[in-house]
Image (cartoon, rainbow, N blue to C red; front, side):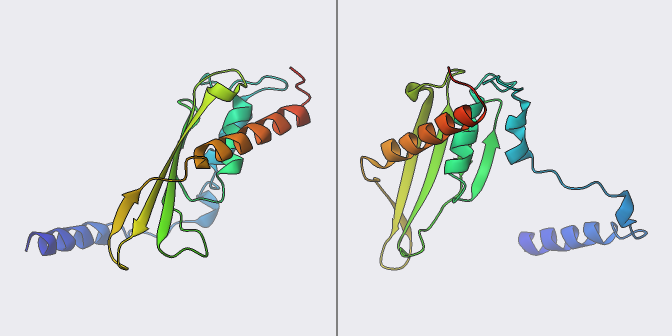
Length: 157
């Protein structure tokens, strides 16, 4: 009953939003904040305004782009993906939390946590450990991409 009441209130509240039609030319174009944020690094600068390494940040975004992003905070250096099911595996899924910890491009400046779940009897998901080398492999790819980005930007530090 409570859910029914809540649904009626929501629909009723949205009905009042109709008003006059909007002029499409008055709307602002959408901005992709997630991918544009690291542009805060200027020229050869390797730091974002928030204090994390821009190359590591962008390397992590590029490397994890095959997974749906749940949230990404460039200033805090945190990237959280949503659950991803590999195309050939219907009974397992993965989620990643990546943390850029430093302003320098170093191997210990990024930390990854990989979460894995498997489906039990085609029903509920159960937490299971990921392969021990999964986080290390993804971290290596992020570092490789970050170094590539730095080289493309002329940063030979």
